[in-house]
Structure formats: C-alpha cells, structure tokens
Length: 112
Image 1 (cartoon, rainbow, N blue to C red):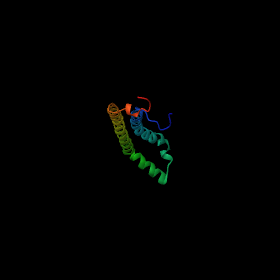
Image 2 (spheres, rainbow, N blue to C red; image 1 turned 120 degrees about the horizontal axis):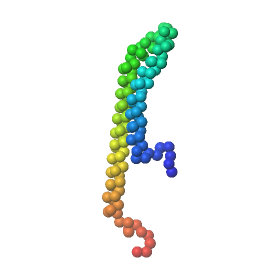
Image 3 (cartoon, one colour; image 1 turned 180 degrees about the horizontal axis):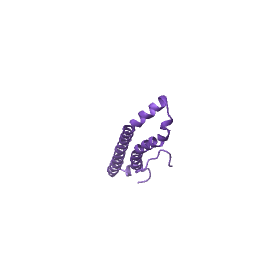
Image 4 (cartoon, rainbow, N blue to C red; image 1 turned 180 degrees about the vertical axis):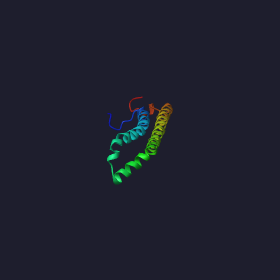
C-alpha cells in the first residue's frame, strides 16, 4: 500500500534537486517583484512609499538572505539524504549478517 508519506530511495535526492533549483529562482523572483512594481513607484505616497523604497534599497540583501536560507535548507536535506542512504545500507547489511547466523530449522513446527 502506498500512501502520502511513503518515501522511496530517491525521494530526498529529488527534493534536494528541486529545492536547489528553487534557491536559484528565489532571488531572481524578488528582483522581478521590484522591477514589476517600478511603474507604481511614482504613484505611492507616505508610509507605503517609504516601505517600498526601503524594500527596493535592500532588495539585494533580501534576495541574498532568502537564497542563503533556502541553501541551508538544501544542505539539511542533503544531510538527511546521506543519513537515510547510510541507514538503509547498514540495515540491509545487518539483516544479511544476522540472517546468516539464524537457526531457521529451530522455528519449524512440523515433523522433523
């Protein structure tokens, strides 16, 4: 049965790839937002204009902070992927090792 939370071997790897692509796109989207709002710049007054001017003045810093935050998330996802893969391999190796020493004949309930 497959469900919403089933996780295949490549799930985290795919997530890392998608998130890293998003990291590259996020800073560009913030800059596009400022460019798209420029036609409205002359129509703003008061605190709205001050906030937009502040945002515009700090857009590079905001984009860099967002990119750095998303990059840290990507790094964490990559670490989880490595841990998952290591755990999966170790579990299989341990199962094979333990299976080799198991007495399966002792668990039979029929005639011997």
